[in-house]
Amino acid sequence: MKNLLVTGGAGFIGTNFVYYWLDKYPEDHIVVLDALTYAGNKANLTEAEKNPKFEFVHGNILDQSLVETLLENHNIDTIVHFAAESHVDRSIHGPDEFINTNIVGTHTLLKAAKKIWLDADNKSHRFHHISTDEVYGTLGPDDPPFTELTPYAPNSPYAASKASSDHLVRAYHETYGLNTTISNCSNNYGPFQFPEKLIPLVIINVLFNKPLPIYGDGRQIRDWLYVDDHNRGVDLILEKGIPGQTYNIGGTNEWANIDIVHLICDLLLKKFSNDTSLAKQFANSPAAQANHPASLISHVKDRAGHDRRYAINAKKIKNNLGFIPEESFETGIRKTLTWFLDHQPWWNELLDVSYKDWIAVNYA
Ligand code: NAD
Ligand code: TYD
View 1 (cartoon, rainbow, N blue to C red):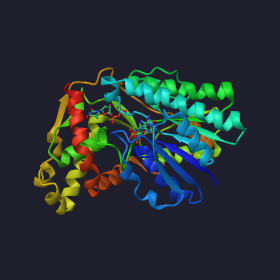
View 2: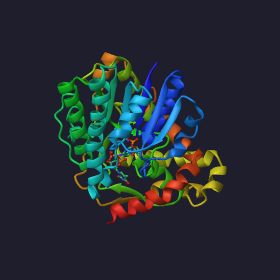
View 3: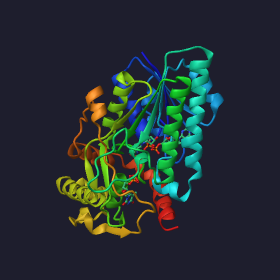
View 4: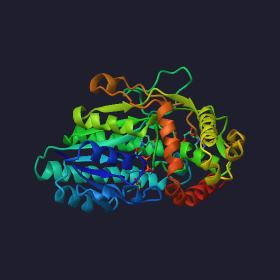
């Protein structure tokens, strides 16, 4: 039985992790620590809060004494650290929060973990740090995918802040013997993703007849993984991963942005033609008049320093820990579309914030 502290558990991947874990390990206790920034949503955890083994704490990972108190009072043996500023565009226009949360915040957690788990008395423990493939930089069209040995070459302030936090986690293992593991995952998609990220943004803009902004030529490539598969990978690392090690997680699923946008448009058009209630619910969507939503595609100025291609070599986690993604892109994207169509109240509330912010960031 484990007692977990999940940081950032009210965000996209953290929320999915909480539901995955409560379902799979009903004996375990989970405490979520989340500062509820624009990306955190306590309502995501409404169902979890009905479970007596779950507790939500509104607080900041920068608050070391709060973290120490939580580690002690809840007898925490496992930290799963998701909390971060996570959006590349925001990091370009305002890097300070990324430095504070992603670097200083991670270091604060490490200090608290060392104090409670190592200095006070030597408790069995694990600190798992959630990171990204963006730390490795960008690939050319024919380059082999990133392995765990690819040198770090982060290009955005977001990627640099995550790279820096990875180095701190590694150092706390090497120097102090903290039992750490790190996972570097590719782009996630699925339920609860904040609608400033490509996939939910495109879905929602199609429904509201808004432009689908494609940065530059749209031929940039990302390696997409359904969020539950990411969390299955984290589960395997917690169960069988070796302290001090790093594991890449990915779906071997490379897509150019423009192709994903066309795919979402095609699938939404089909959904509208199979379900006439959607035309009533989203009357402004071109799909409601059987028009192809791809007409909304609008090429806009490219992102500064935009990485051209990410791709993950996931052989280490596959061969050593038995990781195999359960969702294909076909099944994962269908589930995601259905979830967003069924959860309009969830994203309606966030829409104003995310769309206005998006406009502010991109047309500043
Ligand atoms: P998100 O932006 O949806 O959620 C981040 C959560 O962290 C929010 O709930 C927010 O309130 C919380 N948070 C932010 N600052 C905090 C602070 N100082 N103290 C406490 N809580 C704070 O992010 P996400 O997409 O769920 O990403 C989660 C983690 O996974 C991040 O570390 C990110 O770098 C990593 N990651 C994301 C992806 C992806 O495709 N989304 C891919 C690989 C890795
Ligand atoms: P995003 O979802 O922001 O993830 P990341 O930057 O972490 O990869 O973006 C995914 C890709 O989609 C990235 O190449 C940028 C591109 N993009 C657009 O073309 N238009 C958009 O409006 C957004 C948000 C992203």
